[in-house]
Image 1 (tube, rainbow, N blue to C red):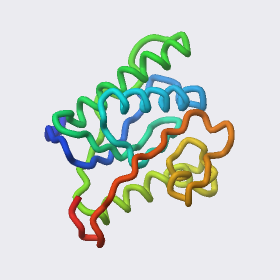
Image 2: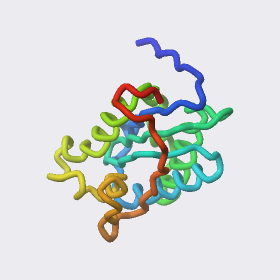
Image 3: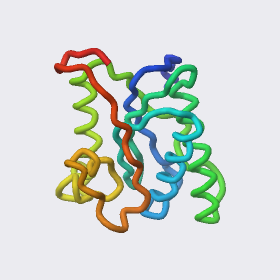
Image 4: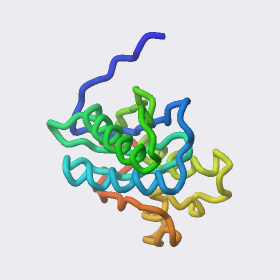
Length: 173
């Protein structure tokens, strides 16, 4: 199967899916905490925005806005390399943690953005991990539910960046 070409874009909003390599054991709360730590640190170092996210045992999703000249490929490279090093050190393991490629979609409208945020927050329910999105500890859903704090012991949550969106579903982003 051939590799899809990736557009090299900055200053766009992206929906991201990153999967754990099929030969590695799944992620749990200690690894979610490591991922959160890496994402906060990389965001601070590179200046990109996170507006929604969720960590699941075999993959994670996020909505990321890299600012020029940073590209989504560089953001994901930085996140995956840093997270792999930290999690491998924590587990006493070596080798790749995530699949080499990732899925990205440039979001174009407010409607698409809202659909992806709902998908991200509903993913733990769809996966059968919880009955309600608010019950999943490692998600930005808690930032979207009126400022309700994540449940205690929720690992390492990543505060979302607030962005002003155009009005109306067809508003371009």
